[in-house]
Image 1 (cartoon, rainbow, N blue to C red):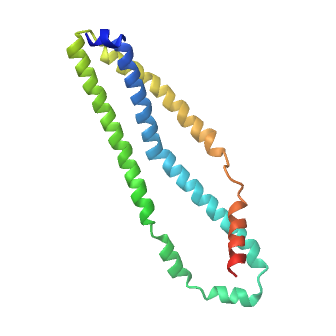
Image 2 (image 1 turned 90 degrees about the horizontal axis):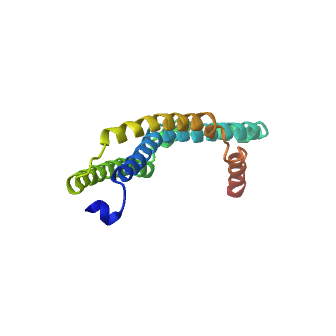
Length: 177
C-alpha cells in the first residue's frame, strides 16, 4: 500500500537512504578524526613560520636599546598564559563533534525505523544485506579516493598569501606604537 502511495521502488529508496547515510557518516568521521586535526596543524605551522620570518627580519633592524627592552618581557609567563586552550574554541568544537555524532545516530535510527516500517507495511521483499554490501564496497572505494584526494591534492593548496600574517603584525605594531 505504501509503495503505491509514493509510487517508488522500495529497494531503490532504501538504497538511496543507505547510500546517503554512508556518505554522510564517512564524511563526518573523516572530518572529526582527520581533517579537523590536519587543518589545525596546518594553520598553527603557517602562523609559526610567518611570525618567525616577520620577527627575524624586524629584530635584526631594531636598535640595541629596543632589543634590551624586549628581553625584559616575561616570556615564560606569556608563553604559559597563551598555551592554555581557548575555552570558547573548546566549547564550540566539542559541541560541533557531539552534534555530528548525534545527527549520524538519529539519521541511522530513522533509516532503520523506515526500513522496519516498509517491511511490515508493504510486505515486499527488501534485500537489506545486498544493499548494505553494495554500499559498503562502493564506499570503500569512495573513501579511498577522498582520502587520497585530500592528502595528495587539497592539502597542498595554499589559501592565503603567507605574507599576510607578518604584514598585519607589522601594521598593528606601527599603529600601536
